[in-house]
Length: 109
Length: 109
View 1: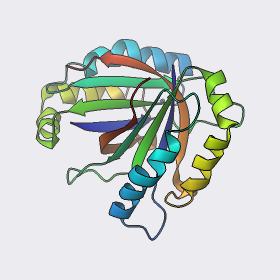
View 2: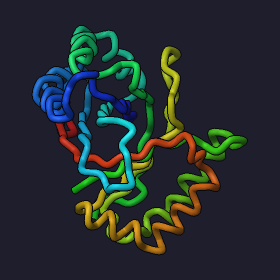
View 3: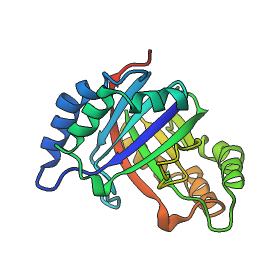
View 4: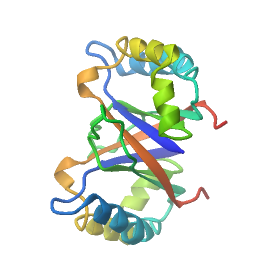
């Protein structure tokens, strides 16, 4: 499988609470309908230690079988609907998107 | 659980292959010894579609039970050993580190 990673920043004028609620309750159900999607996880900000300042407001991870599956998904109406919804809560100028393969170094214990 | 996310960039002068090999084969075994660590996943770059340019060379995710577990880990000699090893393959000026809580929107299928 491959994993698409989006590091995202909330839209100007939104509170962290509004951002998290919209992302989880409105955008989540839209994003999970993307065809070929194998798993979807949102990582929301947790309280940070005093010496850490978060560079992003969250991260989304989307798993697909392979690059062909991702490319097919990107051509779908449901992908476009999800992308269009991002403008409601994300600052597109402060996001980072990249494609990865996972290596589990320490399995969950 | 909480999840620490590191988006990382390889050290100047390293090839992508050297970076991935060092990260997985040398740094992975050092990082997995951090006390209180519940899971460790490295996400290495996959071949990108032509219209995507990756902003980072990879991402590491480290799960802990809670903030107290993370703070205890950060005080440990094994954390310091792992941090010291980062200089061998990471450009510290181009990393992004933040702390998150996961919400699984679409469980694996």
